[in-house]
Image 1: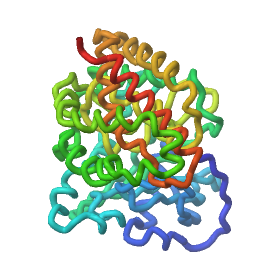
Image 2: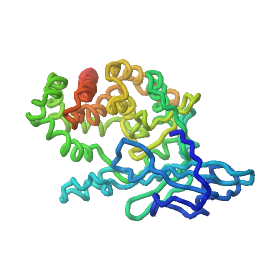
Image 3: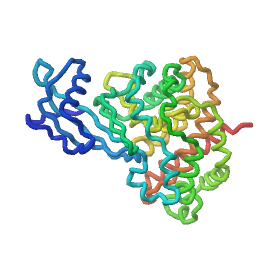
Image 4: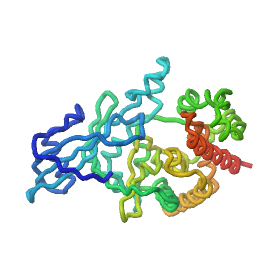
Length: 381
């Protein structure tokens, strides 16, 4: 996300923001806050859409606002990140939701944690090694939308490594067990239960394909998923039991979507900057390990081959992070909770929507295979 920009002097050109824009005086106030000075004079500014190809049903727009301002010592450049978030009823995909369940569907996906956290003091509560961008302005609207203005974060674009995963797992364990963070763990007032996910995402978009013989006749699915069919369908038949186990397990503060995309790295800094807090809430211990482990595999940025070994190391590292915050949770409990979460959110939904992508089918089959193996290995005796 590192950016350099030198627009010509002139009037503000932020039309792209539309109703999300602010007055020049309000922008000056944010830049002064960002720089830690009393006031600045805005010289120029413009808005530019962020180039980002990972869709989200909770995000309406991502925009850079760049320009120059003068705090009394000459022109200096600034960059801010503006994000519009919303209830998923505002997402284009919502038109495919049957009318008779639309109200339930809209209420089943939480979204308010992000603006609430950027307006909070979470940054001061995070364990050493974790940080977050500074929230400079948060505006919530009555139509279930909000706009957050935050500092731009420079990040290191190098590929994610094994050591990054293990280090992140440790810090996510500390985050989950942190007594300082815990008061903000349930900041989103919108209720959510695993039954929402089972009755929504799984019932409408996953299980029909899983139980359709036609799916399994596709060459890519037959080649890579064929041997997994019995295990996945058997697991689907015990979905209610797994959901009950998920709901009754120990719950701790969770980022909710701790994939590498949302754990930014700064050059020379072994820590991580957390972003994208839409699914932040208490979840089963180890919940964040799933996206940490498979997020980049799903995007084609990482190979699935080392997933079992990387996962084992991350479970141990996460448990050590819990212990460092004074919470001793047996690694076996972390691994079982991870197994259940992974199966529900990544194992059962592993069949690719694009059946023509042979490599993606291979990678996602590897996720399903690991999910089945770790679930079987951790079954209560």
